[in-house]
Amino acid sequence: MKQIIIHYGELSTKGKNRKMFQRKLADQIRHLTKHLEKVTIQPEFDFMYVKWDETPYEDIIEILKNVPGISRFEPVYQVDKDLDQIKAKALELFAAIEIAPSDTFKIVAKRQDKDFPYDSYAIQREVGSAVGEVYQEMAVEMKRPTHKLTVSVHKDRDAYLSLNHYQGIGGMPYGSSGKGMLMLSGGFDSPIAGYQMIKRGLELEAVHFSSPPYTSPQSLEKTKKLTSVLTQYGLPMKFHNVPFAKIQEAIRDNVPDQASMTVTRRFMLRIMDELLVQNKAQAIVNGESLGQVASQTIDSMVVINEVTNTPVLRPLIAMDKTEIIELAEKIGTHDISNEPFEDCCTVFAPVAPHTKPKLAPIEEMEKRLDIEGLIADALANTTVETIDSDYIDNQQNQFAGLL
Ligand code: ATP
Ligand code: MG
Image 1 (cartoon, rainbow, N blue to C red):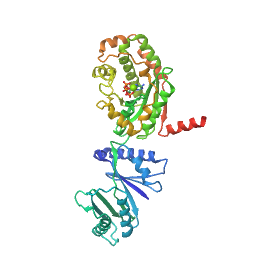
Image 2 (image 1 turned 135 degrees about the horizontal axis):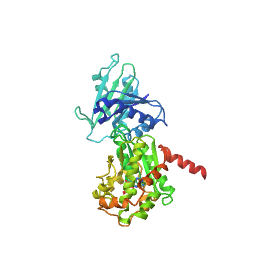
Image 3 (image 1 turned 90 degrees about the vertical axis):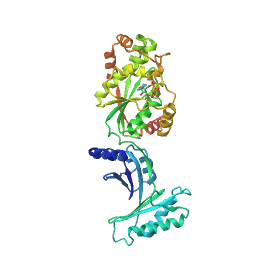
Image 4 (image 1 turned 45 degrees about the vertical axis):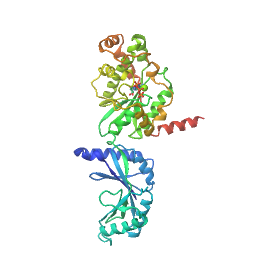
């Protein structure tokens, strides 16, 4: 049997919610490993065991590195209750890590099985000298060792060793903080906004406003692929495609160019509010970053936000574009966002949008539009599908099958 111990950081401070947090985390680990093998998850008070048989450690480690709610984790290696085997495994584990000249180490042993002929102190001494012999430059350090090897000799089971710790991404388990809906364009920002909120435990559904025939099928496809990447950090996600062309045509024909962006955004938020009710979600998430474009000045946000009382979460508000791009590269959305297909906002983008719109004139202009009718029509024609992390592979296979 192979096993990893997971430490959950912030989660352990949540008192009564602990069980729910643990269940959400366990659900997600099971989901993300299901294509490999069935794993057993055993929650303890402030850590959790993941146990399995066949899959190599590396494959499970790669998955756990990206699961929200895990602050760090350590693989635990099993050997027979035999001192030579314990020593051999200890040396193998040290051989697999990088050791700098000034590094120090410590062995911590726990003997639960009193029939084992060496007590904890003797195990520490024996294993310590075996390691010290091979790594003569590495000193023993009790207080703050660079490397800590733990040896546990269990009563009913075998002996277990652990040395390497891995950092997780932190945050909270997916879905443990409620549900929001992500306004997902094909750009760089909104998928990162989604990732940030997923990491903070918010369950998400994606909403994309598309404007065929002005926008291409590839533009829609791009957003679905971005959704698919996001599901690698959460669970399968609903994707709502809202047809937006009629609204954009009505705005183009009735609203002065400079104000069209503000009015367009207000329509998006009104529709988001309806979708939130329909899907029992509590917050809107978008990729706005202060001052990035005309619609993202404080003055614009005030006038746009005026149509809703729902919390609009803007995790990127204080981030620079370079930081956003770096994160996009790290989480795997960069190359998809970089594809050239334009979304509805770009196609209808005004030449010189207002950066300081005023509410009263905007409301006046909106009187020329059948707001309720347009929204009802868009909602009636909205389509929904569920997207999973294998979406991109499946699309590629289908495409290959057509050739
Ligand atoms: P992004 O890189 O996410 O496209 P952006 O810098 O291009 O953002 P805007 O086009 O002003 O900025 O959009 C601001 C936010 O509004 C986006 O981050 C996204 O959350 C939302 N948004 C914009 N266009 C759409 C769309 N077609 N469908 C859904 N949401 C959208
Ligand atoms: Mg955009």
